[in-house]
Length: 98
Image 1 (cartoon, helix red, strand yellow):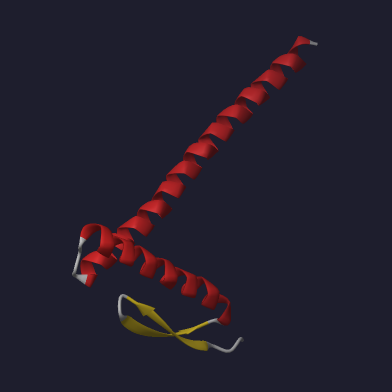
Image 2 (cartoon, helix red, strand yellow):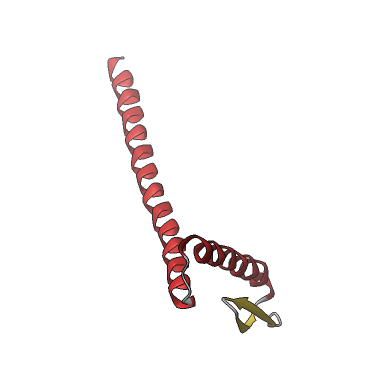
């Protein structure tokens, strides 16, 4: 079992101490940095003063991206299945001619 790593992440002027697997550190640090950048953007663009509102807007932004990727992947999968079915029908039709 690997050793746990203790890190501190700063998000919206608060420090969050975490105990994590070392393999998670890079992803968590990047995520915290992305949240900080987006929060600053929202604060500047919308003159929002309440950190909770800014964090809620960040959460919505990130969650909507994840949901949209899932929708896009589902649509891509359906399109690929339709193309495969068309190819299968075409191959079967050509094989039936002989």
